[in-house]
Picture (cartoon, rainbow over the protein chains, first blue to last red):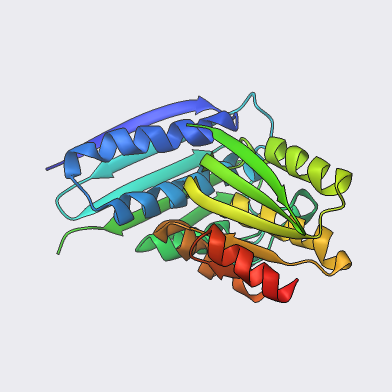
Length: 140
Length: 117
């Protein structure tokens, strides 16, 4: 079984919810355990929130792109923004690191993505954007 | 989808019952509502009832840490009850259990606060 989906939306926070709803619809065919779906939803929510809040500094006039795909073994989610980029990816991945603590951000986004998926790759170029690729294996 | 909040003041605590999904799109509104009540009624202890909260990402963790910062000066405590499995996992990753108590339900949460506050 294989499928894929490409979608882009404006960088509005309401679309954090939208992206989760799209993911649930996309995965419906796979009949996954609830725990797997919930972990994917959480990881996606973190990545999309990061794209809007950090990548675009809450500027709603930009574009976030999603790519979802699955095969018989794994699910892939890519979240991409054309925002400011990450200066130091290793620092950003540190649990509790945040550039926006004054806004009550916990600094756990990448940690949650890492724990809730099997593979996390972050490609970022300062000034041109960030691409987060997550893979979760679901079949034995 | 979305989030609704119901609050009740019981003796020495504010009980905050969340229903729906908590993320960055609705946390500011929630923060405003909760902070208003905390200030207005000089609340010291908080009980978060997550029984009907179906989804929460790390935004919720930031929100709880922020509220902890408000009440700890007054010697207050936080109890979180009825978390679903995925939210519990987020909670465990966050290390929040060092500053919050966890209960299975609101009755147990009340008992914890009855003892420690």
